[in-house]
Image (cartoon, rainbow, N blue to C red; front, top):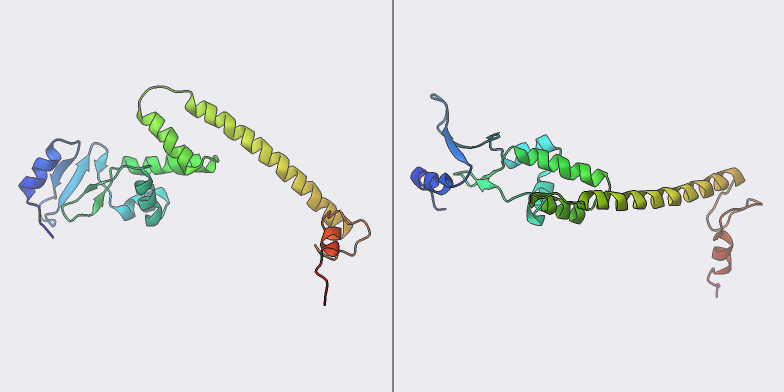
Amino acid sequence: MNRVSREDLLARLEAGPVQLVEALPGVRQDIVLQGPGGPYLRSGQVAEQAGVNLQTLRYYERRGLIAEPARSPGRHRAYPPETVTLLAVIKAAQRLGFTLQEVAELLDTGRRGHPTPDLRERAREKIAEVDARIADLTTIRAALVQVVSAGCDSLTHCTCPECPLPFADLAESRAPEEK
């Protein structure tokens, strides 16, 4: 592995928002990456604070949801502290029903820095999807209540007199003939 000198590292990082901070006297003299939000975090720290696993962190990085992190002198990933907040936003959007692709598109729109009705429009679409799923689940619930009330005991050979399962008879009529 090529070792990077402190001077080379300083020169590389000088142009960006990352600064190098020396460790306290008497403490091992590591170089710590420091950003405007505080010291950069290693993968495990980010994953733990955000409540995700390392594979999720790397997957989001590959998908472009989070930026590829800087590297420490030891080549460890060094994430800015804001990454934890971004991961929380991504997980919250997923809980609201947005797919990772939709989240990526919304993040990209937000990164462009100009207002857009995109989030509101997509939220309206999600509301319509949720309403449709609620209607489907309500229908399913009503059917299950009928199954319980009728005393059904089998999907294919129900013996209850008023079986509400529309496919119980079909299963019987389509059973393969024994030879």
